[in-house]
Amino acid sequence: MRILFVHPNYRSGGAEIAGTWPPAWVAYLSGPLKRAGFTDIHFIDAMTEEVDDEELARRMAQLQPDVVGTTAITPSIYAAERVLELAALTIPDAVRVLGGVHATFMYRQVLTEAPHIDVIVRGEGEEIALDLFGAIRDGRWRQDREGIKGLAFRDGERIVATPAADTVKDMSTLTPDWDVLDWNLYKYLPLGTRVAIPNLARGCPFTCSFCSQWKFWRDYRIRDPKDVVDEIEQLHEKHGVGFFILADEEPTINRKKFIEFCQELIDRGLPEKVKWGINTRVTDIYRDRELLAFYRKAGLVHVSLGTEAAAQMKLDRFNKETKVEENKQAIRLLREADIFVEAQFIVGLDNETPETLEETYKMAWDWQPDLANWAMYTPWPFTPLFEEIKDQVEIHDFSKYNFVTPIMKPAAMERGELLNGVMKNYRRFYMQKALFHYPWRGTGFRRRYLLGCLYAFLRAGFKRSFYDLGKAGYWGPQTRKKVDWHFDESREAAADAATDWQSSADRAAQAAARREAVRKQMKERGESRAAERHPDRIDVP
Image 1: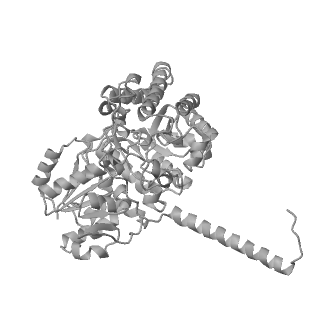
Image 2: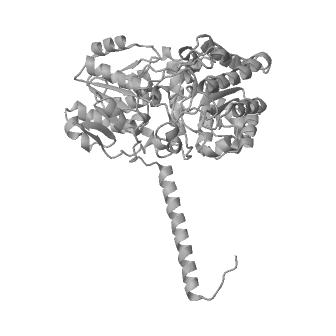
Image 3: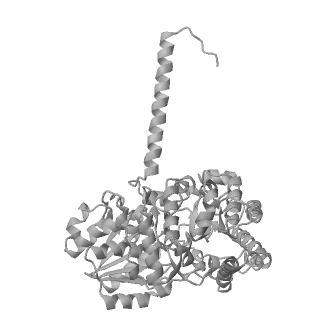
């Protein structure tokens, strides 16, 4: 059986300005499939190769696969639907499969607007794909599909979702097939080297209200650090990878395992050959302040911190469980350990004003991270925060839900003014860094890395790809009232997200609520019994 995986051609002008990123999902799916005997697997990275519809259809017709699979986050959902539409038109006998976080929660809307999709894989795909692809190979998937967990599909006019499959418990089975990728395509611009995105752990115990990842992965699980370092060693020696970013939401959650991971890198002499970066929480940096030099010795050179907001009110609304002062201290600690630090700010909620944007700039400059990013709040339609504010969401074009387009319109600002305020922050921050910091502070690797980051920003700015400015028609403050994001106004409001998906954090919250209810009930019963025994007693508050 021939399988074709396609990464949809979608760009936002956000994360891709730093390089071309290898789609790790296809490697993690191909690994277990090949071990199970599915060896005829092909992959087209339509995004990195910039493959248009005509060329993609031509390649599909040439390959004649039995299965076409793709994936989608929310902003790439329409591009993914188009991939499978092309498959329906070009190779109609192939089974068309969609996976990813958006389809997992929004399967009803996806299957309604894209009836050419045969089946959706909901949740982690490795084990579900083995069952599904085995049934397809044996010609029995339509008969057996209701018995395969983790699927959604159309049955006539009915949309069916089978019970959720369990999460992957044996993390040693997550051995990706990195050979499926063409490594000539993937480069990290700041260092001019090949880049990979391996996975140390899955899930997150925190419940940030704007994030969907903790809901998608459900449980927090971590791999054996030696297995992950085996991967990294292979990526370097076989594919020439010189930089990697751990895909985890927060790889430092399990302090013991993270230390083991770092020590394993050091023991194999990899920090001299491969540098790496992570995203993590401010609180973990503060907790590990005495270990930061050790992390740097292990090759950790770049930490992106979810500082998220300058105002404590926003941090509390995001359920970040951090304090503004902790952000400043964490950035200082990282700088002192010679680790490049990137501060991430979320802007664009309903209470954003020119004054709050100015506040984030002043704090960014006061904190002095090496890099700063201002991301537009994006209301993923399956997050807790979306449920709070969905009545305020006016834009239903998911292709713009990309952290660079102002989906939300603040009460006191127009969208063009919001974009202009964010661009003003970028201009001031990086102009001062370029003139007074990057060329003059530090030597050797530090200077080279920072100038490489500056090059990536300037390159994206020159090409007008940064923040999709070219397509939106933004050329500076004088155009802030003329910006056009080309929203597809024909798109309807997001359907309700699936409610049959329960994370470990959901279960923990429900258990805590039950315990609190029991405590309250016991207290009320105790007070009631006491009142019955002493009816004449008056309690003085």
